[in-house]
Length: 101
Image (tube, rainbow, N blue to C red; front, side):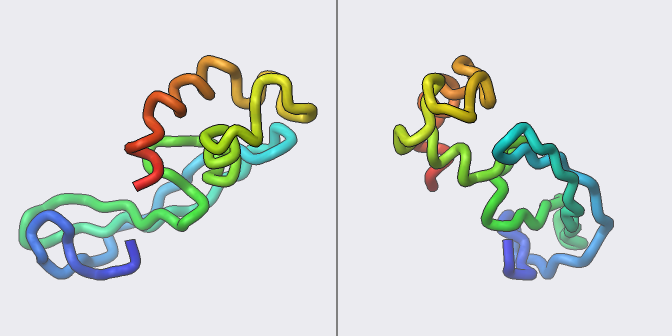
């Protein structure tokens, strides 16, 4: 979200705080990044400002998720053994239309 306008009501968003977010990357590396949260004074809703490499509600980086959805990363892919696990890959494929909006 790069705009400063509330997607719910059109109000002007104001910085509320920052929160840590876990991001899992290749090689089982876990990073923590700071995500800004913005509040709309008009409707009171909180919105997180996510970078392009993070999907909402997902811990894995977008590159890994896209790799699974495009078939480049499978349970048999070397270096990705059980990372993410096969059930997670199946769940992402079922959510494909929501993830690639």
